[in-house]
Each structure stands twice: as C-alpha cells, then as structure tokens.
Amino acid sequence: MSLVTTKGLVSPLVIDIENITKDYVMGEEIVHALRGVSLQIRSNEYLAIMGPSGSGKSTLMNMLGCLDTPSSGRYEFNGRDVSAMSDDELAAIRNREIGFVFQTFNLLPRADSLRNVELPLVYAGLDSDTRRERAAHVLREVGLGDRLHHKPNELSGGQRQRVAIARALVNDPSIILADEPTGNLDSKTGDEIMTLFENLYQRGHTIILVTHEADIAHHARRTVRLRDGLIESDDGDLSGVGILPRTLSGLEADATASR
Image 1 (cartoon, helix red, strand yellow):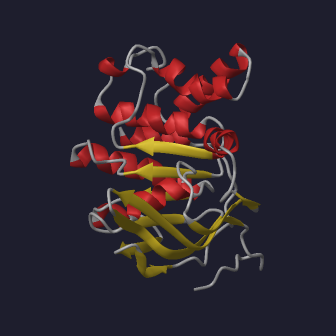
Image 2 (cartoon, helix red, strand yellow):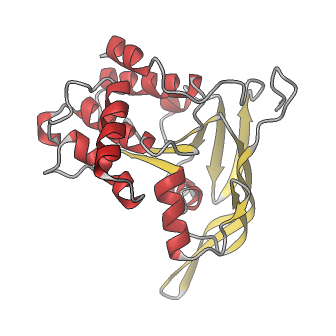
C-alpha cells in the first residue's frame, strides 16, 4: 500500500503506537485486553476498527482517544509521547485535538444545540462571543442552522448525532474518533450520518470508526480487525491519504441534501 500523495509527499503521522499492551486485574485474574498492538494512522485517513466482543477494540479506542494509558509500549500523538503523560496533559489532548462521537450522543439534556457544541470551547478558555460564533458556524455546516436553540428532546436521533458531530468538530481536532456512531439510529438515518462522515473525510479530516458492523466499516478506506487483543488483519487503500485540504466548506449543502 502506497502512502505517497500525488505531490510525492508522505502524509504526516497523527498516531503511532508500537507494541502497546493493556492488562486489567480482575480479582485474582489478569485480563490481557491488548497483547502487543502496533498501528500507524496518517493524516486524512478514514479507518475502521472492527472486532467481536472481547477483541480489544474498545480498549484500543480508549488508548487512541487518550482516555486510558497502556500498561506497556509506546504511543505518540502528533509526534508527542503520550504514554506517560499526566491526567491534565491527557485531558488537554482530548479536549483540543480529538473530537469524540458516541453512540449515545452524550448531549446535555437541558442545553440547546448551541450550548452543547460550545462546551469544548469553554474548557479551551475562549470568550463567550467567540464560542457562540464558532458553535453556530459548525452547526450550520452540519445542516442544523435552523436548530441552534433546540434541546436534545426536540431533535430527532439523526439531528442529535449531528449536534454531537458538530461538537466534535468545533475545536478543529486532529482526528475524529467515532464509537458505533449509528448504533442508536435507524438504517436511513444511519446512512445520512455516514454520508456526513464521508463528506468530512473528502474535506481532509482524519476519521477513526470503531464498529462491529461490516456495512458501517465498509465506508472506511482501511479496516483494522482485532481478535484476542491482537491485530488480525490490516487492509485498505492509502494511496490518496493526505492530498485533500482541511476545510468544512460545502458541508452545509451536502448535509441539507441528505436530510
């Protein structure tokens, strides 16, 4: 698989993990969730991580998202070793450089769309005017310009997931990490959300999907399969990685067309 772009340049590594393990102590038993996983992910990849229950995919997602640290091995995120970072340093990476999209949306029930999307910017220390402007902009880009002041219970499942995606995008993260993003949606709405992810990828975003559904993983350009804490296979076409500019321009029109 080639990692060379049309300009002859190799896309920069966003994630570089080498031989990481993760062990959990369960009473007198030690569970080896990851048994020596090595993986490189470059800018503007669209990657799916698959595996059955107990394969280690959720543990790997937690590692990639800096939600947990490995028991051993090396993990570099944008060239920085995060394997031994403090909790505060990991929190800063999670807030500023990783956009999370969850199956259950994880929206504040009493806050409107604008406030939910603003939340990462509050932790980033931006002033209220800047927060509101950026949140409104990204909501419009995902097709929710007319839902800025709607609370989650006033939105459909697909609209809630769009709010969650807007929240993931608002800090312009290095990667978007999506955990079963269509798991709570019907098939039609799930297809619309996957179309939105495709549009984001086409505009230069790096997307990592964690899923057990083959039809969802099929949208990605590369699929990594885990079994028993090890990478079973890693396949995909990376020839176009990194050649597209990072921009949200045009997403609003695409999102509106898919609604």
